[in-house]
Image (cartoon, protein in one colour):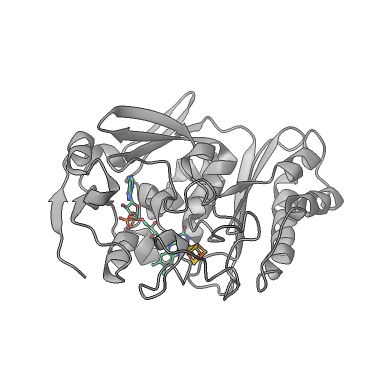
Length: 320
Ligand SMILES: Cc1cc2nc3c(=O)[nH]c(=O)nc-3n(C[C@H](O)[C@H](O)[C@H](O)COP(=O)(O)OP(=O)(O)OC[C@H]3O[C@@H](n4cnc5c(N)ncnc54)[C@H](O)[C@@H]3O)c2cc1C
Ligand code: SF4
């Protein structure tokens, strides 16, 4: 790991002041440090300055009010997984947090860091292998070991977004609150993640001086659930994940994870279950619709089958 400057920010304003205005300045935020320290040790990023957000009190705030809930970006996954009110009102979010990583990691890893973590693609994570996302000219995964890669939107870069929480938040319908030197802005979660087609070098819409300060969830309506299928039951990233939220018999939002470079709304499946009672047959039909447009790579066709089973199960579960 190369030497870098370390700054402990004491407020949101001071954090953004310490961050650079351009990517070339290589000043990056650190929250729990789970991913950023790995990336630095692995030689994938080489910060000139780490700006530590972990002591900023405002980022740890939780506010439940009549119209919804604001959750600070510094809340740990352990807190999200165990908070009684989050479990009751936004079960998909609590379940997504509970399924991520290990208890030790969940006790450090934060909401903001989880949304902003970098891809787990093994070519990307190997400092000796060039790829588009590191400024190279080709993607070795397209013809290579792509069993964990995307089955939607596979070109130019079939990475999958690794965040469990992003999937739950997409289904729940969330706004991401961001602060930078120019002030604050509120970004719908659909617009927060940037696909490789738009810019292969970035995963989020954040400018170099911006941080996520909180997320805002509307007051819960109906119910929600999150599920994932992974190869092993101890810590692992999902092969496919899914979150559903809404009112059975009314509107249901369905989000898929680990199948595309950004968390994906399954709008075809949503249309199939809208305004009607969810039977197992209808759930299976909706799951077919969710994966009808998939274009798997040479080694990941299994994700289609696994994904359909997961979507069917979750729809049946919330449909009662
Ligand atoms: C063994 C293992 C298994 C895992 N399994 C899963 C899993 O199943 N599901 C899952 O979702 N994750 C999984 N993870 C990933 C883990 O959850 C993330 O690495 C963690 O949530 C990152 O949070 P952090 O606070 O430590 O972020 P950091 O490592 O501090 O930061 C991560 C990135 O986010 C940026 N960042 C941090 N906070 C902010 C902010 N407020 N605003 C803007 N940018 C910010 C940093 O600059 C950095 O680029 C796993 C990790 C490991 C090591
Ligand atoms: S999938 Fe994306 S991150 Fe992985 S090797 Fe290809 S370009 Fe790089």
